[in-house]
Length: 331
Image (cartoon, rainbow, N blue to C red):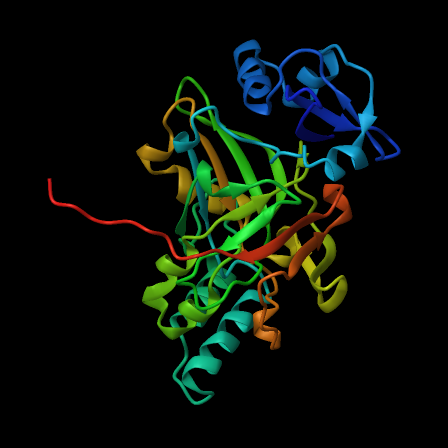
């Protein structure tokens, strides 16, 4: 089952699921956000899929019309965006270290010493998938932002004026709600474009934190249930409607150096990330980067992540944004 959030033509929020054809969304007559739906399911002690199945349904509506009219929303959000944590990890996929090392070579030359990225990647290969009941090696981790940095699918992703570049990072995202007792509930998974400034990151790994403070996008569909062990698709950069670059998306645990369970352990062990009522979107790492394959993106380029297991593709156009105007004053 996959869930979609959107607005009706009258502006009312809706939650629904694609029908078998994929051409229509069947709205729920009850909860109008995934947050409310999931909160109710936790309170009632039922699974998310069961909560959807037991809800009354409204008449199907055209998926294409929702997209064409700009009414599609991210598949999860919080009524208080500051309570939606956007975080992530990297160097978790078999191809991710090669991409990160290529970035390092571009900035520092092929003769540079083995990078910290490659070292931590090798640690993941050796200890990122612990046996049941054991704890594995700690992964890389970064803070991306809060709910205000998530743009809907089919919407523009802004590239700040101070950015040195803007590039896609096609990833799977784990989506979580913290229950009333402080325990995390995994609602499911979605496609994500983590969107980073890889040129800034390549200058010095200590700039990683800066390079991640950008907008991102999630969706359009939330996959309820287990993550496919091997999930595949395509990543594309489009310019003027034509494919500038295309690469293969390979994810799922069979293509990762860390298990999802291990990544979740190291994120939710911190008390601050188990605050009842909070949401979390946790990016699981990119298997492939266009920038590591010589692509230099520009304003107006479109990113497309097309993975059939997750339904419709995630698409966003990158648009340059003017420099912000602000003044720091002494009070």
